[in-house]
Length: 101
Image (cartoon, rainbow, N blue to C red; front, side, top):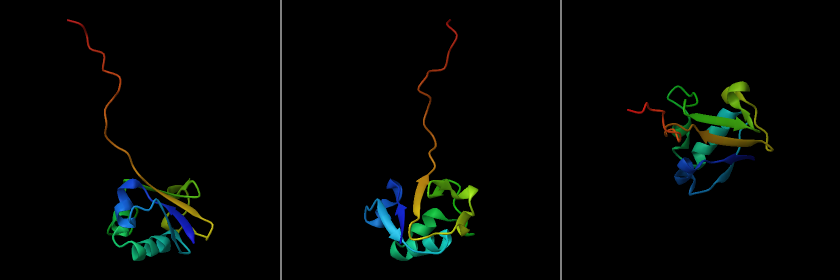
Protein backbone atom coordinates (compact mmCIF):
# COMPACT_ATOMS: atom_id res chain seq x y z
CA UNK A 1 0.00 0.00 0.00
CA UNK A 2 1.18 3.50 -0.78
CA UNK A 3 1.85 5.91 2.07
CA UNK A 4 -0.15 9.16 2.02
CA UNK A 5 0.83 12.17 4.13
CA UNK A 6 -2.25 14.06 5.26
CA UNK A 7 -2.05 17.82 5.98
CA UNK A 8 -3.46 19.23 9.22
CA UNK A 9 -6.62 20.72 7.61
CA UNK A 10 -7.71 17.26 6.40
CA UNK A 11 -6.86 15.27 9.51
CA UNK A 12 -10.36 15.62 10.95
CA UNK A 13 -11.40 13.28 8.13
CA UNK A 14 -8.68 10.73 9.00
CA UNK A 15 -9.26 10.63 12.78
CA UNK A 16 -6.20 12.88 13.21
CA UNK A 17 -3.87 10.47 11.40
CA UNK A 18 -0.88 12.20 9.76
CA UNK A 19 -0.02 9.19 7.61
CA UNK A 20 -2.46 6.72 6.09
CA UNK A 21 -2.17 3.93 3.54
CA UNK A 22 -4.15 3.52 0.34
CA UNK A 23 -4.12 1.43 -2.82
CA UNK A 24 -4.53 2.19 -6.50
CA UNK A 25 -2.71 1.71 -9.78
CA UNK A 26 -3.00 5.44 -10.49
CA UNK A 27 -3.34 8.52 -8.32
CA UNK A 28 -7.03 8.85 -9.17
CA UNK A 29 -7.62 5.26 -7.97
CA UNK A 30 -5.69 6.04 -4.81
CA UNK A 31 -7.93 9.09 -4.19
CA UNK A 32 -10.98 6.84 -4.64
CA UNK A 33 -9.57 4.41 -2.08
CA UNK A 34 -8.88 7.27 0.33
CA UNK A 35 -12.49 8.39 -0.06
CA UNK A 36 -13.75 4.86 0.69
CA UNK A 37 -11.69 4.84 3.88
CA UNK A 38 -12.26 8.48 4.82
CA UNK A 39 -15.55 9.71 3.32
CA UNK A 40 -15.43 13.31 2.16
CA UNK A 41 -11.70 13.54 1.51
CA UNK A 42 -12.12 13.34 -2.28
CA UNK A 43 -14.34 16.43 -2.25
CA UNK A 44 -11.55 18.31 -0.46
CA UNK A 45 -9.03 17.31 -3.16
CA UNK A 46 -10.94 17.25 -6.47
CA UNK A 47 -13.51 19.52 -8.07
CA UNK A 48 -16.80 18.42 -9.62
CA UNK A 49 -15.04 17.60 -12.89
CA UNK A 50 -12.57 15.32 -11.13
CA UNK A 51 -9.63 17.72 -11.40
CA UNK A 52 -7.30 18.62 -8.53
CA UNK A 53 -8.53 21.78 -6.82
CA UNK A 54 -6.40 24.84 -7.62
CA UNK A 55 -5.39 25.33 -3.99
CA UNK A 56 -4.26 21.72 -3.49
CA UNK A 57 -0.83 20.41 -4.51
CA UNK A 58 -0.14 16.70 -4.68
CA UNK A 59 3.34 15.21 -4.82
CA UNK A 60 4.22 11.63 -5.72
CA UNK A 61 7.68 10.63 -4.51
CA UNK A 62 8.54 14.33 -4.06
CA UNK A 63 7.49 15.23 -7.63
CA UNK A 64 4.60 17.61 -8.33
CA UNK A 65 1.95 15.67 -10.25
CA UNK A 66 1.51 18.65 -12.60
CA UNK A 67 4.91 17.70 -14.02
CA UNK A 68 4.15 13.98 -14.06
CA UNK A 69 0.94 12.46 -15.44
CA UNK A 70 -1.49 14.31 -13.21
CA UNK A 71 -4.14 12.05 -11.72
CA UNK A 72 -3.01 9.28 -14.07
CA UNK A 73 0.42 9.17 -12.38
CA UNK A 74 1.22 5.50 -11.65
CA UNK A 75 1.23 4.36 -8.02
CA UNK A 76 3.10 1.38 -6.58
CA UNK A 77 3.08 -0.06 -3.05
CA UNK A 78 6.37 1.81 -2.43
CA UNK A 79 4.98 5.19 -3.51
CA UNK A 80 4.81 8.11 -1.10
CA UNK A 81 2.11 10.70 -1.73
CA UNK A 82 2.02 14.10 -0.04
CA UNK A 83 -1.03 16.36 -0.09
CA UNK A 84 -0.05 20.00 0.41
CA UNK A 85 -2.64 22.78 0.65
CA UNK A 86 -1.51 26.01 -0.99
CA UNK A 87 -0.63 28.84 1.36
CA UNK A 88 -2.04 32.30 0.81
CA UNK A 89 -2.55 35.55 2.61
CA UNK A 90 -0.50 37.10 5.33
CA UNK A 91 1.29 40.39 5.28
CA UNK A 92 4.73 41.75 4.78
CA UNK A 93 7.10 41.70 7.74
CA UNK A 94 8.94 44.74 6.41
CA UNK A 95 6.94 47.95 6.70
CA UNK A 96 6.55 49.94 3.54
CA UNK A 97 8.80 52.97 3.23
CA UNK A 98 6.80 56.13 3.76
CA UNK A 99 8.01 59.65 3.09
CA UNK A 100 8.57 61.70 6.22
CA UNK A 101 6.37 64.77 6.56
